Image 1 (tube, rainbow, N blue to C red):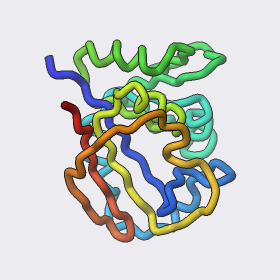
Image 2 (cartoon, rainbow, N blue to C red):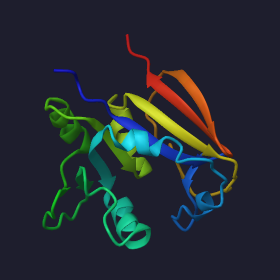
Image 3 (cartoon, helix red, strand yellow):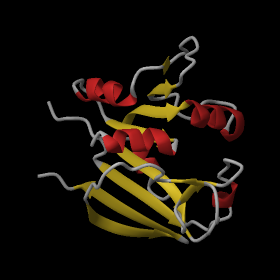
Length: 177
């Protein structure tokens, strides 16, 4: 059985922020794109979604009336779990422990959607296999950075670079011995 990959597919501003000071992605909506920055192809590989509670609430409140990840099983990490919903598990478990369990099961790509603290907790446990970072030509000055508290160095190899309108997309793979 091949080990499941943890792939962070995420957009950031030119100065490294994934959300503005209001915790929105509105700044990203104005960026010219020719396609979907590979999202359609990527999401077809994903069967598990990981979200912090604030990210989950933001998605539910602002993105759409229908939960956009209904075709995948989602885990929402929160200190105050609520009753599970169809295909959504609310848990106070350690994200790294959940990912390690998931990696022992058959399945597709595991995508930590956000927030940055969730992504960093997985990175700090060396559980992130790849980053697909879409860089928008916008500077925010302040906001939520992609990396806030990285605890040590991790090396990645740049696999490819693509362009979609004004978005530069960088594909990095974890360099392991």
